[in-house]
Amino acid sequence: MMPRRLLLIDCDTGVDDALAILYLAADEAVEILAVGTVDGNVAPELGAENSLRALEAAGRPSVPVAIGAGAPLLQESRHAEHFHGEDGLGDAHLAPAKSRPTQEGAVEQMVRLARAHPGEISLLAIGPLTNVALALMVEPRLPRLLAEVVIMGGAVACPGNQSPWAEFNIAHDPEAAEIVLRASWRRCTLVGLDVTGQAILEPADHQRLGGSAPAEFASRILQQQMGANRRFELCDPLAAAILLDPSLATYQELPVSVDLDGLHTRGATIADRRITLAPTAPETRPKVAIAMSVDAARFLFEFANRLGSSG
Ligand code: BDR
Ligand code: CA
Image (cartoon, rainbow, N blue to C red; front, side, top):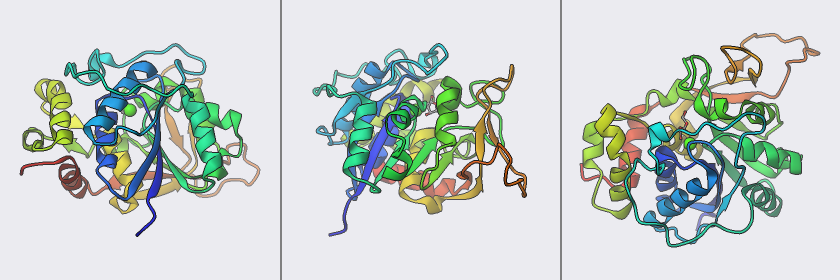
């Protein structure tokens, strides 16, 4: 039997985070070691409740869920209930989860697991990067202890969604994102709005979801957004899919920094496209694999397949 792929998810469960959990949990070859939650779409306590609900719907009720940072490193928190609903799951009024979060914090959990499985864990970060930045402070060897990190965040060559220049996960905690993007990971992949803008769930895709517990759950939490906008951008599920199958996207390998000072550009992800950098340039930093194009049709097919679609 093939060894299972070890995964740690850091998230702010919200609608698309929950869909990403369902997408990953549908894969028998994936072992979700744990989930950690961070302040973002909702407070981390509610994010943990929603992660447990998604894991239970997906048939993985024993995955531990730990609560992490309750606020960004420096700035005030601004949640996204206007988009994800007061309950973070499209105001679907779901039953409470049966399990409870663990006593351990999400940062401690991340460091403990990375040390216990050196070089083996893929980290999927689909919320603001506060927990990951804090874990880097606790354990500076984290970039070598993890196999890779795949981040949903940023808008490198396209407009932002939180401001003209900044994407939500980065804008929520720009200092944390800057700490993470300058670290020397074995491999770091950025799945930003450049590609998620192509991963759109249409009403017909939504209507076909059904016939299984995960599909019913997905259908319910999508109802509010599909009713309001007739479309839903599958940001976090696309990052999950790219983690499992990097051939879904093409990449540019460039250093990326986060603007921290701009009046209009704070939280923007700046890729350095210069071909030649002076070796001593202060901006020299490790390269990040930035997803620049995606096979959206293949992803959407896979999404429907994994969640359960009658069409
Ligand atoms: C990201 O922001 C959040 O609202 C979503 O869950 C996703 O992680 C998209 O910009
Ligand atoms: Ca998210």
